[in-house]
Amino acid sequence: MPHEVADLVAAACEGDRAAFDELVRITYADSYTLALRLTGNEEDARDVVQDAYLRAFRGLKGFRGDAQFSTWMYRITANCANTHLGKRNKHRHEELSDDAPIADDHPSSDPQLQADAGALRERLGVSLAALPPKLRQVVVLRDIYDLPHETIAAELGISETAAKVRLHRARKKLREDLFPPRLEEDAHAV
Image (cartoon, rainbow, N blue to C red):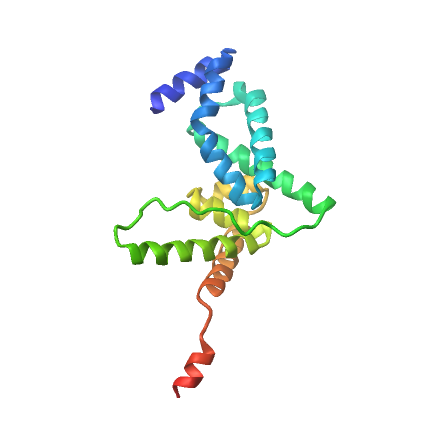
């Protein structure tokens, strides 16, 4: 598949619209999922992905192939989401959606474990959506898309240290939300 993608990129760079359409088809689901996780809203995610593919189409001749096309699309999508969230936050204030799905790549065959994992995913989705956008962006790019700190910092226009600090704060907040201390239970046990 990577060779096929490289061929499609080369053809798209030469103006082959069908090749670009195929690149969109191949990468759309991942780009949309990233946009949804970063924006927490389906409508915003669709806007971000549309903008990302428009930017990719316009900038395709500048794609050097140093990274995979999908990684390049992640970066463009993250940048578009960051821009979109900045504009949205300046113009309106609304709650982020709590129903962003979290993909389960390793379903268990045990129904109870599946139910527990589903409940945890739901709680994680709620906690992730509740994070401020600056923290959510870093944790999604690092922990879900496995981008290195250096790349995250460059994409968000912050220092690598700031990216690490935001990631630490985001993980700490998620941990506190998902696994709160049980002081009441401990007090009753005494």
